[in-house]
Length: 135
Image (cartoon, rainbow, N blue to C red; front, side, top):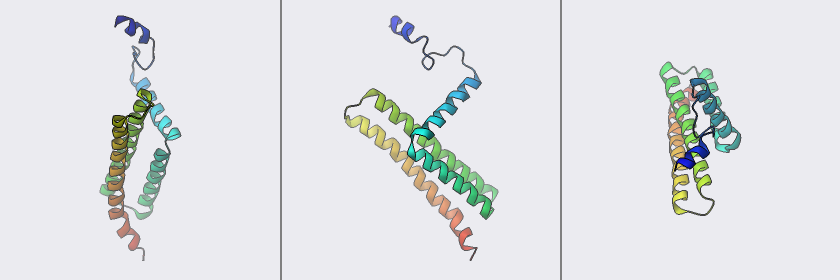
């Protein structure tokens, strides 16, 4: 076991003795950029987030509605990041079909879907009445 520890001692992401807040933020930002550049659904979520923010400005939503929108945007994007991480770990562990790998990937994707549907419904509750006020 000790020989394994020596093998990974110099690996940046396994053991990092020079840990500071700036490098932690840099790695987190790298993860977000990686997910955005490799995951189609992350791009969709980001475009929808921009659309919601623009709609909020146009319809002059209340402070509480802004809080709700930002919490939902953050929750959907955070879940998409977790889903991406789970899929990456599963893909790293096995390339063969495995029932449990499928369950892990499908349930993490399902979590994103559930949160996205909740965000959509709440978004409709916030924005549809404001849209109809225009007419």
